[in-house]
Image (cartoon, rainbow, N blue to C red; front, side, top):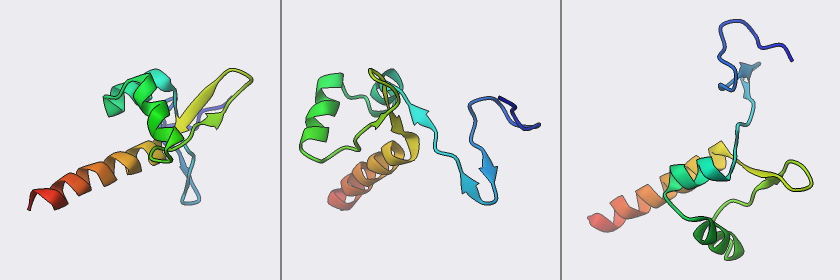
Amino acid sequence: MDVPSGEAKGGSVEKGNVERPQIMRLPQVKARTGLSRSSLYAYMRRGQFPTPVLLGTRAVGWIDAEVEAWLAVRIQARQGSAS
């Protein structure tokens, strides 16, 4: 797979103003959110966290933009309730 020049492997890629989604695996999602695996799946069951994308028969990953949007909503809710 060719990586366009000037781009780090695994980095964000823009081509024609369309950004490719980046996939986060469970350890990355846990580290980014600070939540445990069981908490993440409990939030998903309640429809309160993005569901993962099936990558293979036993592999899933989350779209980073969806995880970041979820975090942004949580931060915004905290800031709104602090006033």
